[in-house]
Image (cartoon, rainbow, N blue to C red; front, side, top):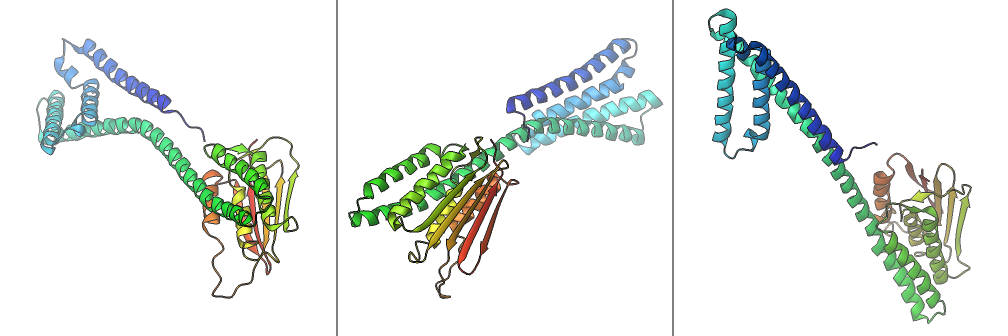
Length: 337
């Protein structure tokens, strides 16, 4: 959505105020030149003077009276403005009818009061332009802060699992420990380097997943049924918010291999098309007793849904399905190049 900068909004606001004041003053001076000194009464009760007085009252009310400390000062200012409008209404009644009556004076007074309120409303709306600009900026900053918080919540959970794997290998004096540390170091670099970025090349996100799977294969063995397939039918560069896909992958291992290594499998298929990305992650299900069952959608998937709602509100979809032996998560995102 197209948004104006705060500086542009302020310039527009000032321009509108200048034009409005210039028109009021020009009409007021023009009427003064045409009427003075021949007909002072006509000048004081002309439409130009009425507009000028109502505009002054509106500007003073908005920029001065509302900022006064103490109710009595505000009430005193309001009474002064009412007296000015009553005098102006009385003069107009006298000029038109050669006498001053309550009914006509009150009618003119309410008309002037309405003009003052309309002028005040005009000033209020014009000044809200800048407020709306600030609101949009604050809303954007809030969304970015929320997205950053949700993104950071993934890191402790992932690192906890990764270091547990490293600990297991070290206890066995496994020769693959050094390779594990090297790959984990590369993942840590991605975590630290890309955290502040809004979007990263999709290739880097996939490389991150490949390193993750390589680490898990070191832990569970090369014969483990872990499969990653990437179908890239679009050679042009695409960009994605970092750490979206890893949530589904990590969740599959958490409920697959981490609970039942013997019969576990994880299959990951990433299909990149002209329109975007489709990531399907399948993992085996472990049949548990009713007292062992827990809700599958933990913090990881919950955070993923919130991030998608913030980052791709109208261009993403996450579908979860389940068969007797398989749990399937499908994520579809429309990506930009």
